[in-house]
Image (cartoon, rainbow, N blue to C red):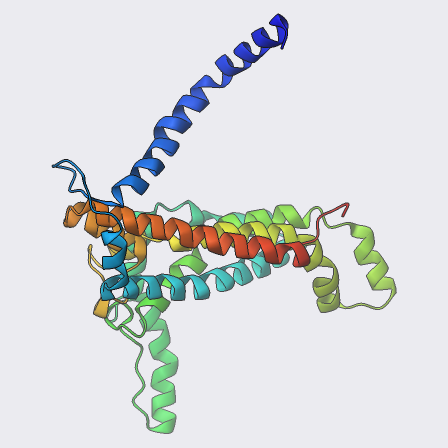
Length: 305
């Protein structure tokens, strides 16, 4: 390496040094520390004591951990596909040239700007079993159906019934799909118009054009929203935590891995155990992302390939 190349390298490193320092201080070091503390008995207030893999052994025998893991997987399996489906449908509808299109786009995007705590409080009232708006709307057809069939159907008490608590949380995800809608709308602008025109000449209808043109062209955007939705759903914390007043919900139905991690770290001061949960959560997200990556090689079509 010549003297000029060394000077150029030193100059480049000097320019990116703030990012390197920030990455090492706020990303690399916390991750490495979490992995180390996951093999320790550590309560923050006292020095860490190495205990090998005992935290992971305890996790394998922890019924509460398995409940949190199941809740997280179930919520992700329901919320991610439903959220993407709703966002994609809204984006396609909002892509039509209709009067007031900009107003409708703004309306559907606004919920995604609501802070998580405000979102949780809002839906806590909407899902209230006695005075919630959702149940007041559902009670009208249910009362008519009861009068017709002689049944006694009633709207569920969403946040107080373990059978419906996670479904109530799914509503909050679907309500806040504005960011995904905007990304899908941006992707729809890249769909070549001549493909639609050629399909129309061949007699293709709306659904045929959607299935054979829109979705294949949007596959990279769908993949991106799927990965981001996966990461977000596995880390769900603020909304269920506020909804339950810092608890787990009925029969721990709203206890997720991120919540259980927080409880062990800051309620029980068992930081080593919490770090082990964090490592498991990271590996779970990494594994699911790698699976999606492998599937994308056959189902995601990029322009020019």
